Each structure stands twice: as C-alpha cells, then as structure tokens.
Image 1 (spheres, rainbow, N blue to C red):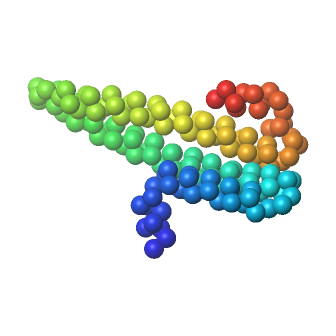
Image 2 (image 1 turned 180 degrees about the vertical axis):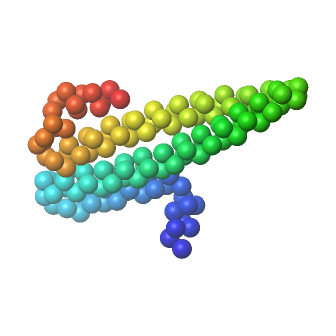
Image 3 (image 1 turned 135 degrees about the vertical axis):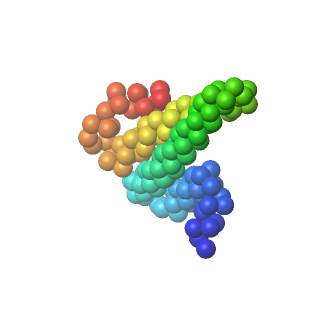
Length: 136
C-alpha cells in the first residue's frame, strides 16, 4: 500500500515530503545542536534518495535513447523519413543532460549536509569545499 502511494506521488513528492519532515523536526527540537544534526541527517537521507531516483531515471532515458537510435537506423536503412524520431532523440539528450546536472547539484548539496552532520570536523567542512559546492 505504501509503495503504491510512493509511486503515485513520485520523486518531487518524496522530496517535498522529506523537506516537510526536516522542517517539523527543526520546529520540535529545542536544542540548536540537536536541530542541526538531525536536520542534517534528514537532508542527507533525502539527497541520497533523490540521487538514487535520478540514476534510475537516467538509466530509463538511456534505454529510450538506445531504442530511438535503433529505430532511426532502421528507418534510414529502409529510406523512410525519421524527423519525429530525431526530434525525440534530441529532446531526450537535453533531458539527460539536465538530469545529470541536477544529480551533480544534489550530490553537492548532500556533501554540504554531510558537513553539517560532522559539525565542522573533517575535510568536508573546509571553506574551499563549501564554496565549491555552492557554485554547483
């Protein structure tokens, strides 16, 4: 039952739900230190989920690209026009590029959440790393 609901709401819904949980935890907890650590963990888990969903979507886009490429090759071999398929292939390429950039951005945000969890300890908390991830 829960799995069906997760499929229905999709990736955006899951991300919004995890943001809501983080906000509620921040409102409930009294200690600033505890808030930062728990909200950091919630954000980190949310980013891991988002990244895994995006990898799954990238795999599907790759499969769609491969099938469209094969159908274009068949159409060219038969001498049939394939303008619509080429347009779909171009759009899939753009979608794949945007999905990759979004995955890199979520990875950078996840690293920043991990730095919050570690509370300023370790190489992830260095200013150079934080500045670099902000630019992504």
